[in-house]
Length: 131
Figure 1 (cartoon, helix red, strand yellow):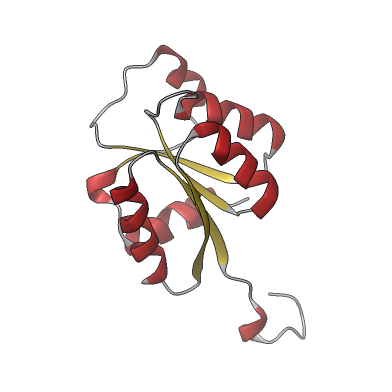
Figure 2 (cartoon, one colour):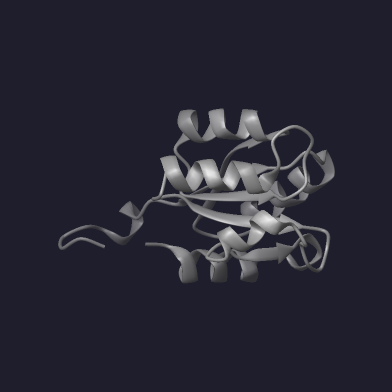
């Protein structure tokens, strides 16, 4: 907060969800809505639409599914890191571990299991990763 700034002037963390599963997008939307200080600014069902949504919506935090048809979450993450280093990217997956060779290049990005996702984890990820 800046000197003289009122606490209510603090901007909410803007979250974009990129996932090909409508059910998880709905769950993420509910979790974000239930977390004070966070707002869902949009959703995308595939990697290319997600990249376009980042350009259009300027989120602070992107929840990004690892496995999607077309552009994988790994490729989308690579592109977002290169073009939008200010955005916090979090990889999400139903799987416990991801054995994708290129995932090792993204070791600075946390991988979260979808089944563990909730308000507490959302806040922790933001607080640990924001720049």
